[in-house]
Length: 125
Length: 436
Image: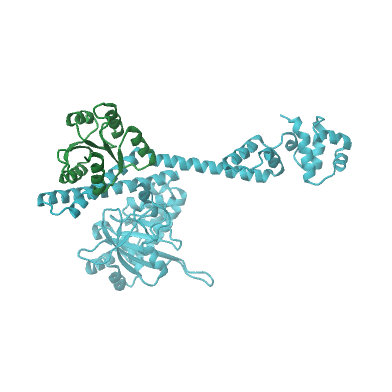
């Protein structure tokens, strides 16, 4: 699969998860940028204009669900695929993410293969 | 208030219930059968002497005829029927049921109330698990560490070739995250154990007794003097810290101190320490050299000052498996309220009381420390004809000897907070397994 030039923005506050996921995606050819808090995540999204956003639910400053609602309210990113990562696996959490507009929802701890497959499916050509 | 429109019905129901003819009841009450007939069909108001005579003849309290069943009881029964969802419950007959069988109605209402109380408790606890900010933060910390370890270890395992600098970086990350995971798991377990105690709403006499001993590092120097006797025990129990204990805890303390004194007399401190200097803290060698049984050696080792022998843990259970003495050691925790893990060697010696055990054990989720556990069963009281001897199982815990290799038994603290999956000894689900 040709991923050349495809940009993924990973919004996650755990440094070692950032490093691992960035490594996996970079090895697969994705251009990965990262952001580690909820405060100014929307500004970073506007600056980076990613092809796909990986968004953690529990972030310092602002929740991933709130950020997702802002993403969907912005005409430029309303259609940008968003993969949500969360430690909460209850149905109501999944429903909340889907209502907010998540394209895919993964529960921590996830497998690298599943993350890669989801990214390829959501942002592939 | 007298429910005039129902009194007649209640009189009739009661009369039929005890199989009395209308004419007989009328005669007993000193009224005519035709008048009683009008009363029973609620066409005549009654009160005063007539009501008292009818109640006496029917062998019921007058109030049961005038007031009927307790309104709260009836409401409770209706609620019970509605909650059960049974369509075949005759709601129209609720009051009649309460009047005819007040005892059974009371039992049913009490059970319904208790059921509702328990349901509310479950809801509260469930809500607490879902919304407790400390619990949520702790679980988030643990899950984040697990996620990072899983992703990083997968990279190390699956990526070929992996540059040395990446390898070193990911190894360092795993090391950091595993330390974070161990710390997070310990915090979580301590919190959950504390929560269990808070839910119980009080500290048990066992907890008070253990807190008293822990404050002294389980070493009672006053009872170590060669001439210590019962007066020293009495003096200890009159001390400010002992007087602060509840009465049941003071009784427990008395028994514990008596056993301590007996043990100290059997293996005096100075002589015992000299043996340890000579042989090391090896219970089997010490037992052989002193002629004491292993259980006594275990108790004496656990009562020594940590500065002399290092950390020593001890668990003692009775024949029911209940822990009656708990002195934990780093890497090996003991539950305060719930039953302990059935895989502990402590319980294994119940089945083979004449064969002491020595097993290296590791409590899952406790930081990976291996601990040396030695267990033995001991007689705690004499047998009699038709009466078995009381036994107490003892398990001594020491840090794992350096350089020792071989099998290590993985076990837990207590099922409820144990993360081991597919454990044949599990007796209830783990909230950790469910949570993850």
